[in-house]
Length: 175
Image (tube, rainbow, N blue to C red; front, side, top):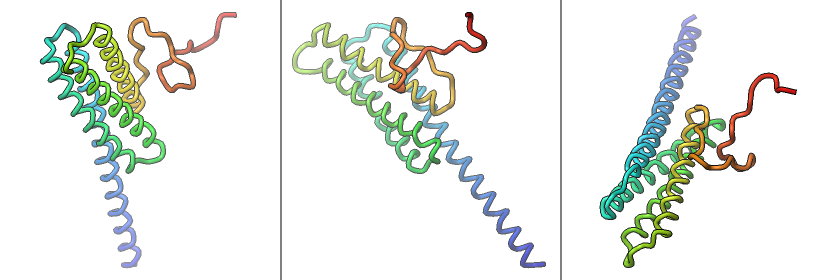
């Protein structure tokens, strides 16, 4: 009888420790998602108006550093995740890394030895905006949210590309 009670007690402790570990992991995933959304929101706010070149470069440097940290954190979590959560975490990691690269490129264009042309600035900004939108979509997938619409005027992407698709109509279709 004592052996059965000890076995049940051990099983209960094991189950509780597994549940606590899963809760801690979920909390870390939520923190990564929150940091990523905060980064994207702050980037959008910083780009809503014209900024002096030095302020824009400093903002890009800070955001680049935060994006690299986000990529590392998401990659670390992906290695510990279940098979069903790992792909979303790897997507967040890759998107954050790509955003960091785009921000670094934009910063280089802005503070390079030669004054950038408007075309160079526009290209760098468009690349950063695209990478930011990619991170938004990856964060949505991680959180299980509905996909956000693409930027205004952006065409729907190819179905096999893993990028935003227009929602399909639900229910009976008109014939």
